[in-house]
View: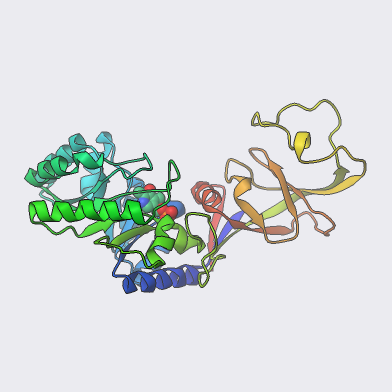
Length: 355
Ligand SMILES: *Cc1c(COP(=O)(O)O)cnc(C)c1O
């Protein structure tokens, strides 16, 4: 079976480094575990290293972590579905929210369960994903403050996800001012003024005035050591905490160019032989790996060996081995990007090996 090799020590060190940077800026970190499918072993390592808040987008991941004895405050970071609110109240301490109808229902359920559920109200600051429009903030907050069973834990915003809008001094300043107005108007303190995700790293370490923003929700930096805007490695962080390993199951010399009339591949995409590879004579040293798009998007893999990924179907990744000598049974190693990691963590056909 192909596997992810997960180095817990390196993940821990990435978290500790991020924690230090954040603390120097008076920020708290919510560790976001969705890209590792809320893996309890990883979550435990992070909690041991000092993580207090774990955010995950799937309530099922939160339930699994709690059942496995992960001891932290759990935040559901995808706005909840009306159909899952009972589970949310039962298992999550807080949730990100953007619909008053949902918040009212959370309040009703929390009263029944005799619980206090924290609401982090999401505000739309330009990326057009989740969040209420800024001009609705005051009115929504005043309604939330009247509800029992819940408390306004804070407000949050999320950029660089849907539209790709970069967190900058201007939108962060506006967000901080919104939070300040709310605190003043209602005489409350917001525990979380949560400014964003790994795409906020450059802004975090810059000298920009952070206003009263005091929290970031971070996954990518902890697991991959890259910042979220250009996906560039951040110096001082491990970029190889998680690597992907697959096995060669066919290894042959095959013609450099296909024979016959070429149409699209199995996924309806233009064949790589239409643009990327030339119609030339000779043989290529080619291998098939025991993994495919059911498990991982091959475009998110960077080979560590000197080989080239050609393409993939559901069950195979096809590799150009160049001039290297490999045999059936040999393993090839890869760095993963966010999407590849997400897929491989989720696939039951990829083992997770801790070192
Ligand atoms: C996924 C997610 C994050 C974390 O993003 P990273 O890029 O992994 O740091 C933060 N907030 C929300 C709402 C998310 O969905």
